[in-house]
Amino acid sequence: MTPGTSTTPATVPAVPVLGSAGPARVFLAVLWRDIFVTGRELGVFLAQVVLQPLFLLFVFGKVLTELGYARADYAELLFPGIVALTATLTGLQSTALPLVIDFSFTKEIEDRLLAPMSTALVAAEKVLFAAIRALIAAAVMFPIGVWILGSVPWRADAMPLAVAVLVLGSLVGAAIGLTLGTLVPANRINIMFAVILTPLLFTGCCQYPWPSLAHLRWFQVVTALNPLTYVSEGLRAAMVPSVPHIRPVICLLALLVSLAVFGTVGIRGFLRRAID
Amino acid sequence: MAVTVPAVEVHQLVKRYPKRPVNAVDGVTFAVATGEVFGLLGPNGAGKTTTVGILTTRVRSTEGTATVVGVDIAAHPVAARRLIGVVPQRNNLDRSLSVRQNLLFHAAYHGVPTAERTLRAAELLDQFGLADRAEDKVDTFSGGQAQRLMVARALMHAPAVIFLDEPTTGLDPAARLFVWDRIRDLQQSGVTVVLTTHDMDEAATLTDRVGIMDSGRLLALDTPAALTRGLAGRFTLEIGTVVDDAHGAQGARGGVLDDVTDALAGWPDVDRVETIAQSRGSGHQAASGPEGGGMRLRLYVTQEPAAMVAPVAELLRRCGARLTDVHLGTPTLEDVFIDLTGRALR
Ligand SMILES: Nc1ncnc2c1ncn2[C@@H]1O[C@H](COP(=O)(O)OP(=O)(O)OP(=O)(O)O)[C@@H](O)[C@H]1O
Ligand SMILES: [Mg+2]
Image 1 (tube, chains in turn yellow, red):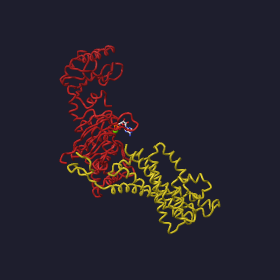
Image 2 (cartoon, rainbow over the protein chains, first blue to last red):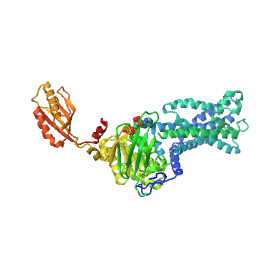
Image 3 (tube, rainbow over the protein chains, first blue to last red):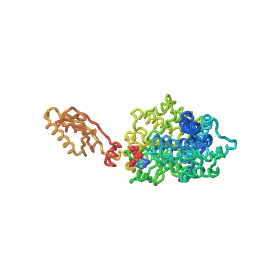
Image 4 (cartoon, rainbow over the protein chains, first blue to last red):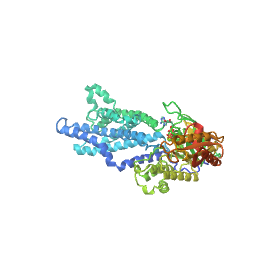
C-alpha cells in the first residue's frame, strides 16, 4: 500500500465523500462565516472600534485647538494619525482577543481547523478578516472627521498611497494581533493589553510628525521601532504632504518588513496552538 | 488498488507531549475495517483522546504511522480531513451561530454545494430531533442536545469514518440510548465508527471490537465476547444473606457472618470471596437485609454459578443464616480490565 498520494483509492470509502472543494472555496467559506457573524452586529462592531479614535480626534483636534492650546492646523496632521491608529489597532484587536478566547475557552475554531485546508490558511483567514474590519473602521473615520472637524485634508492624488498604506497597516496590525493572541498565555491577556497597547498607541507618531522629534532623539528612535509610525507617516505623506514626513517608500518598505516578520511569527504561533 | 484498505490503521503510534515525562500514547497498533464500530475503552488519562487527536489531524504524533482510508494523516492532513467526521469530547459548537447555521457552515467548510447542504441539514435536524430548535442559538442547549448536534454536524459532509470521543459521557439514559441508536444507524449505512468510552456497557453493547487502553498502551484488542470468553471459568455469584433471628445477641450475629465467609472460602468450587457490604448488627444497614446482621458477598466460582445456588443456600442455613437474594454474574469487560491491570476501571 502506498498512501503517498492525496487522492483516495476508488474502492473506498463506502460512503461517497460529499465535499471535494479546493482550498480557495474552503477559505472563502471560512471567511464568509466571520463576515456573516460580524455583519449581523455591525453597530456593535463600529461602537467598539470607533469610539476611542472619535474621542481622541474630538479632544485633541477640536477642543484643544478651539481653546488655543494647539495650533489651528494641528487637526490637519492629527487626522491622518488617528486614521492610522484606527486601522492598526482595529486589526490588532480583531485577531488578538478572539484568538485567545477561541483557543483557551470556547474552542469554536476547532470546526474550522478540521476543514480541508491547511492550518496556516486558517490563520491567514483570521488576518485577512481582521484587516477587512480595520479598513472598514478606518473608512468610517473619514465622515466622522468631517463631522467633528468640519473638514478633513484630502487630495485626489492621495488615493493610491493612502489605500496602500492603510491596507498594509491593517494587515500589520492583524499580524501583530495574531502574534500576541497565540503567544501570550490566556491568563496574561489583560496584562498584555495594558503593557503593549498603551505604548503602541503613544509611540506610533499619531499625534505628532516623526521628523519633528529630531530634538528628542531617543524618543525618535523608540517611535521608529513601532510599525504604527509608518502608517501615520505614510498617510500624512498622502494627505498632507506639506507636513514634514518619512518618505513613502520607506514607510511602505517598513510595513512590508513588519508584515513579513509578524506574519511569520504569528502563523507559527497559530500552528503551535492549533496542533498539539 | 483492488485490495480493501483498512478504514483506520495505526502502527506503533507514540505521542509524547512536550515537558511530559511519559508518553501519552505509547506504541499503539491497530486497524479498523470499513464499516466496523471500533471502541477504545480506558480510564481517564489512558490516551484515548490523544489517539483520536492524532487520527483527526489535531495532534502531531511523535513516532509511528496513522492512516485513514489509506491516506497518511501526517503527510496529507488536508486529504484526511475530507474523509473524517469528528465529535469531540468537549462542546465546541459555534456559539455565534444558530443550530441550523452550525450545520450549514460546517458543510460549507467542507465544500458541500448549497442545495445539498440545505437538504442534509433539514434531514439531520429531523433525524436528531432538533428540528423545532433549528433557529435557536446553541448556547441555550443542554449537554445532551449539544452532543446530538455535534454528531449531526459531523455527518453533514458524509464522512467515511466518524470519530466520537466519549459520545455519551454526561448524558442521561434516554439520551444515551438515542446516541447509541444513531451509531447503529451509521453502522447500517456502512460508515466506519471509532469511539472512545470509559463505560464498559457501552463498549460491550455497541462495538464490534474493542481495544482496552491504559497508560497509553493497548492492553488487549478483540470482540467484547472474545475478551470476556478469555476469562472463562471466572463466573461470579453475588449473594445477599442475613442472620437468622434465632441468633439474637449481637456478638453471635457477627460470629455467624464470619462462619459463613469462612465456610464459603473453604469450598473447593469457590476461588475467592469478596465482601461487598456488611452489617454486624451495630445499626448500619447492610446492602440487603434488615438492620442487625447481614452482608453481601461476591463469590468467584469455577463452576456454572446457577448450579451452586442450592448448595450455597444449604450451607448458609447450616451456619444459621438465610439467603435473601442472588445475582449470577458472567465476566464483563470490567473484569477483563481488572484482570489486565489489577485495578478497577474507575
Ligand atoms: N495538550 C496536552 N499537553 C500535555 N499533556 C497532555 C495534553 N493532552 C493530554 N495530555 C496528557 O496525556 C495523557 C493522556 O490524555 P488523554 O486526554 O489522551 O486521555 P483520555 O484517555 O482521553 O482521558 P479522559 O478519559 O480523561 O478523556 C494524560 O496524562 C494527559 O494529562
Ligand atoms: Mg479523553
